[in-house]
Length: 157
Image (cartoon, rainbow, N blue to C red):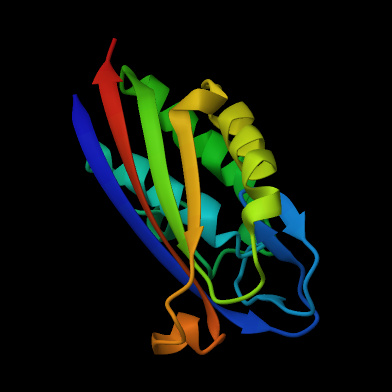
């Protein structure tokens, strides 16, 4: 078995969609990034890659490569899962925490879990997504952006 930890952060920006776990969240701001800036999918991808010492998403999908401009991060996650499978591992579970003052995300959690589980081809029961505020502290608490921590457990098959 192998464990991995992923962390990602993106700043809020105007004229961008807010996409988390492949779900478009209605909000006046989106996240700034080369791809669609889906910070949740990015953190999970990094956890998966890290578990097998495969680097991070920046190495696999660099922000100076136009092929990934506005890329759908769910598709990038699917590519990461292909690499995991190629190495002979399967995902046992994912646990993630979104750090976000606004918007409130509780009504979107189940849909995020479904999109992520579909992308990773695992049961929704094996994908945990939680959201918390930071009580007004730090850049996420001040509403400047969103951060995500994710961990995974992989098993050799």
